[in-house]
Length: 288
Image 1 (cartoon, rainbow, N blue to C red):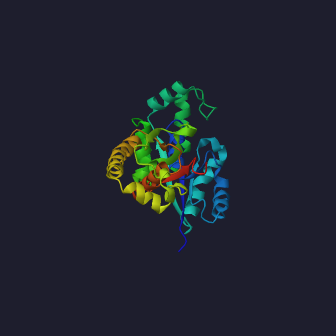
Image 2 (image 1 turned 90 degrees about the horizontal axis):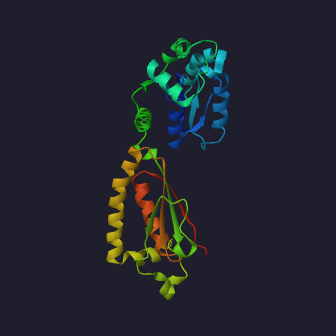
């Protein structure tokens, strides 16, 4: 059976955290659009459906910036929920008046409702315009006392995502003779491992080959290193996620970037994928 497209509509009061929420959705793989008029939601989803599964998670922000078109949203939501092709969730964000006033004051942003005189009147009018939409929400999140990391955890929990979806990991392998990658957050030197470059039958291969991996794993210090590095990242990654870090690049370096760093990078990628993290790997210097 064809997998349903996940559609998350984010709405709520201005200043309540919709921008942070849509950023979280992007971090966990949603294709997101801000301020999409309700009348364009269904055509947009139909367009995404034509990507044949390449876009199967969609995040859309709709709020009072849609003006008179906002009244169409409850009807659009009902039609989407009655369509078996889609899994639809509505997240409504709100906060207390005092908190919203402070946030607008701190950012010096204009409230999207212009016809009212005071910020208090604008907030009250916005609540009235969103009343019917609030009633359709699957999740109503009060963000007055939420830090960014707390809001991210709440969103992920609401969408039943696994914790590992919160961070995107990149592995880069490199040779020190060509310089350390500038994008690296963490650099790990694996030049302590005996170098297969000096063995004739191995020198022309690279660390992606099973023979090279078997060679470096034949040393007790390599096995001990792998145990220690796995334990380290079992500790680090949940804490990076807890602090709101969405992207992390880990670089492994050896002399030429062809044998040891590549093999360790491949083994570490397998470890991370086994923990259900989203991982990409680049062997920067393997062809040099």
